Image (cartoon, rainbow, N blue to C red; front, top):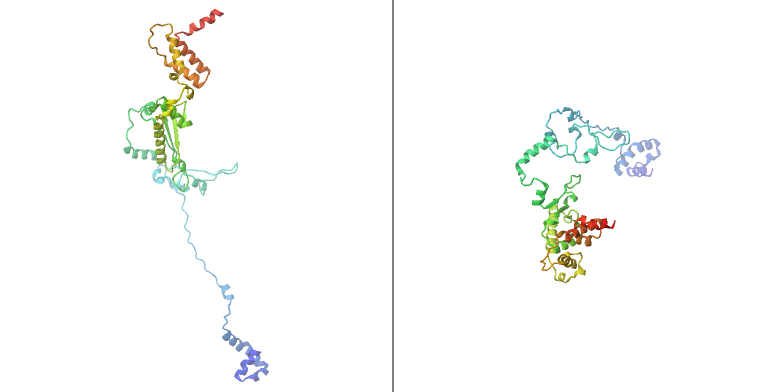
Length: 337
C-alpha cells in the first residue's frame, strides 16, 4: 500500500484510498502495468514452449542390393574382380569362408561381418591363371638359365658365396618388417686360398661361426637398419678376416714346440724318427718320403685324442709304413696259440 499511496499522493488523489472499490480495481490492473513499466521485467511463459513440436526430417532409405557373389558367373575373370592384395570383402569372394574361435560344438562365424578375416592379409588374387599371366608378362625381362649350371656342384663351384635373406608378409602400419633386414652369408672355407698358419688364425677369429663337420662359415649381420647395409657389412667382415689371417706377426716365429696350439707333423721329432726307421739298415739311402696317410694319422691321434677311429687309422698307416700286411701282423698270434 505504500506504493499506491505514493502514486495517489503525486496525482492529488489520496481520497481514493478510503474507497475499497477503487483500491481493488487499481491494484489489479493499473498497478501491474505501472510495476511492469518501472522494473521492465519480462515474464517467461513456458506453456507455449512445451506445446511446440519439432518436425523430424524423414530419411530416404534405398533397398539394399543382394551380394555380388550371387550375380557372379562361374567362368568369370577372377583377376579383374580381385586384381591385387586388398582387404577381405565378403560380398566379392564367392567362397564360404569361416574364421574365428568359438566354444566347442558351435560353428565359427561366417564371412559376413567378420573382423577376423579383415585383420590378416590374404593371397586370394594369386590364383593359377593369374600367376601364369604374370609369369608370361615377366618372361621378357628374364634371361635364360646358363647351360653350364646344371647341378648343385656346378653352382657351388662358380658361386661359392650363398646369401640368405627372408621376406615377410605382415599386418603392421609399416611395410618394412624388422626381421627382413637380417642377412646370412655362407661360404665354404676350402674356397679361400689359406695356408696352415692363415687357416688356423682364421678359425680362431671366427670362433663358433665355423662348422667343422661341413666346413661352412656362416656370418649373420643385423646391426644396420637396411638389408643392403647388412650385406655390405658382412662382405666387409669376410674381407677383413681373410687379410688379417694372412698377416704373420714377428713374435710368431719365436714360438717353440711347447707353445704350439696343435700338433704339427713337420715341426716335431716324430718325423725324424719315422725317416730314420725307414732308412735303418740301408747304406747310402736316398731321402725317403713318408706317406701323407701316416702324417694325417699321427696328427689326428694327438690333436683329437685316442678313439677307436683314430687308433684304427694309425694302425693301418703304421702297417703301410712298415710294409706289413694284416695277415703278417696276425701270424704271431697264431703261433702263440
